[in-house]
Length: 79
Image (cartoon, rainbow, N blue to C red; front, side):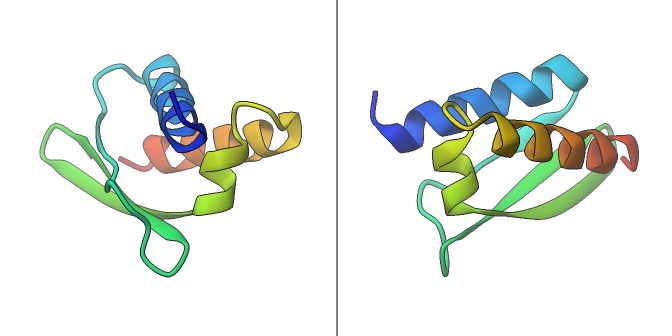
């Protein structure tokens, strides 16, 4: 598994740990070094921008993991 796929997998694990009912769509490639990620729960949808570097660093950097987890809790809570 390459670095990007490992990061995407960890990102999905974080989301399922927060709320397993949230559906996630992550593009295969970033645009301008950002991923436009769709979060959907029931009829509600929200788009978030996540830097490519954050996705790459989630599995190895504890501070990035904590920041992304905090951001996701906030965004999923708003769904």
